[in-house]
Image (cartoon, rainbow, N blue to C red; front, side):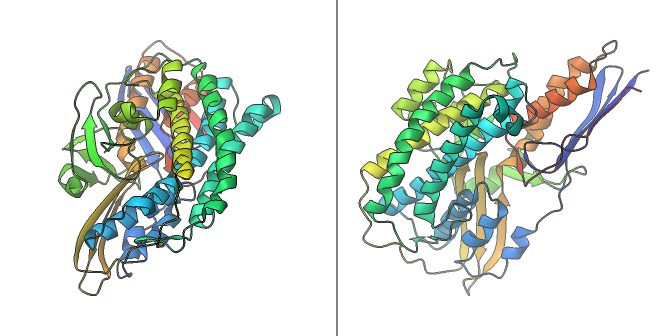
Length: 437
């Protein structure tokens, strides 16, 4: 009887701290655990007793990479509880702000966190020594996204201009002109990025994913929409955002401080770029659709390693759509609409760079938060990440095979980084141990 144990003590080039432990016996994986060992942060408890205007600012601190996502989902949930919907130019400004976040987040992941896997480097810094041009292009794209967030949100990290009902102030058209010029250059860089990553050598892997993403009849959903589900082969199913608790449930697993999510009682569904693309590709901007076709993407992509191509296409879309909004921008006549508190519950969801982010708040008679529920994309993806790892490792741990430890470690990390998990920030390198029994 042969026993094997694979241990990855700490993941690198992901946001956060996690590890992986795999046990195999006689060529069969008996357990596989993606261990998220960061201490829980208790934001949902922290929100209880707060005023109805406070969740956007508090939840933005959950993540320094995607604070806008938390602000937008929070705002929409509170507004829904209060019977308010933000539309027109103010909604366009929110969408513009969100596009800035997509640009900066995807540019960071594609160029500095993920591309080194395909080019044989252990970090973006090492890659910069040989391919400074590629790293500088990624940083320029990220800067364009950050500037867009700053001009609309007040600053690039944890924006301070967002409020329930809209904004504290809206930018004048003249303030947006310099950003538009940078975005035009960024759009060209984004198209070049799609061409670059499409040429990578991708492992021949496909999974029969069950996808979940927002879907909107008039746009590639990011800010709002109906929850769509399906495998991308035909007309998707779905449900309204307010019905989320009836379809998505969370459970604690012993090996992780992060919850695992189930969709209609089943674990292992996928959110994020591949899901958005599978369920909404026809609503990408014309330039983004052209870039996707040139990159060889069909209507659905089930190879998680090619997720880097889909993210690059989404950068093109975000730049293109941001410029469309900027070109037609007219300053709103007021920065926000009034949102008066009332007792009741509200639900909000938006598409963070890493996938669908859901918020629910219940307000009491005094307008204070009585309950808060936040379901981030990484928690929804964890069971699916484990399934991907199982499929990749199983044939390599069969009896008689003796793969190098470095090869197994690199493969596992690449598979996890395909999903761009966000579990905070990690600075230490991989601690890998293989016990062959």
